[in-house]
Length: 181
Picture (cartoon, rainbow, N blue to C red):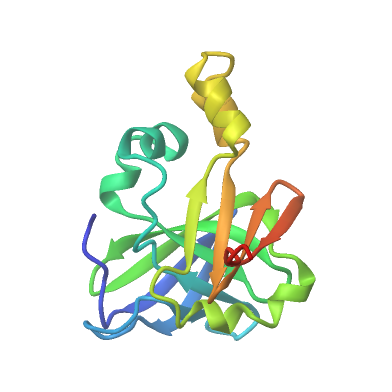
């Protein structure tokens, strides 16, 4: 993974082809790399989540889905705090500051979880990317290709002992296993 730009100001944010001025300082080295990104004018905010522990997708699968070098360069997850839209976030460099490019994924956090986004910022492993089991099977059986698999990406958000899996326009809640009696 590329090194995280610790203690650096994010001066530009690129979202869906538009450029915005940022005003957020990234966390200091040794801190959790989950933080809130704000635009300079305060009009939008995203929760930025570190991909530490996001090890379900292998390097080759990640690179085939997001583009060559995505795994090595590193990527993060961004969630719009207002509408729950999920983005892949990639850092770039510009002189003494850094930039952040947000690429939208075709999924949103359900409204009832928007108030809980702050809980993700204190998790050591706040999310994981995966593919549903039927997609893995179809991929291994050569029924579909990586372009099709990329459209079926699933995001798992870890809210302490509870999790949600978001897949397209659907989601499901997961919890810890219970001891059988």
